[in-house]
Length: 488
Image (cartoon, rainbow, N blue to C red):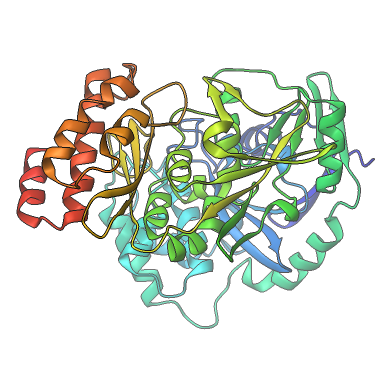
């Protein structure tokens, strides 16, 4: 057993043997290191004021991603490079071109959110030498500005991409080879275990070690991206003991398209899954673009979204509609189940003591299948779902419903199929009268709750209207679809 985590903070190697299991990176930066450029705005991964970059080795290459420090735990940082806004300027005080562009374009007023915007743009700078306006807007989805407005910030990003010189001071590009060597040396070859008065945290060295740890401590909280678990700590003030961090396990981070379908490891982030999902199932790729901002997509995992069983998780409804299956693993071996059978009740999943989600298999939609995902939320980007519907339809040669699967989130205690609606549609002609008759069955399938995201009546009406939208889109009825959009 190893008893410390090691990482690089800007230009300094850090080794910590005293770490609370739920200590956040933001608290470490501000309270322990007095790096106060990283701000606390919301403490829930929503505003982006705490944005930093995390560099890690992926297939031997150094990759930097923007993350929310407010919900990122220290225990997840072993063998990474943490970069804060203080690291961007040169030693003589010369601003980084991104910082200078923000000054030139008047991209700051009160300045509170500015470091987070700078770091998000820096992440884009490293990944994309010629970003389009759409690329810039996507990179800034996870950053909220309450006074400047976004246009000057977007203009700063456009300016710096146009004038980017070929030879330039940059703290990461100039030290990349040195950072790679140091991170290789920090790779853990044995389990890291750190105990404190507040509990115990473990970083398993392999998937086999993870299974052993959970066999010994089945009550442990497994943390991959912490985009949900982080809020248990920052908002609910929960104590978690022990905590097991798995975001570094390469065995859980493969995403591949093979014969019959796509296999996604439980540790694959939304950002990692995007390319394969957007290519093979475009509707799912478009959904990923609406899950949080880049910071959340770079941390959150599809496996974690499934494992915690939230009724408003974005990925389970479409995966259920696609007929996905789960592979669960424990020290005793593997077990496969249909994803729709995994969700039993609110907060209760079919996961036995010591089991964890290992992977998800998603069959390719059958030829000529019509598939759509609709997310309803108060704002389009970076918002929690009020309700989300996924529709999978195959028609017979004569235009009747041959197969239909409809799944919703935000309508029940778990992600759930609309079985009564499906039954009403099966075998019937795919026309407006069939749709209108089937909509009444939503009242049998779902009894949604009222909360701050939406009322029960709104959710029920939205679900029915989404079926109408799916019908209009699949039948190519532009006039009716336009009328429907105007009424919505």
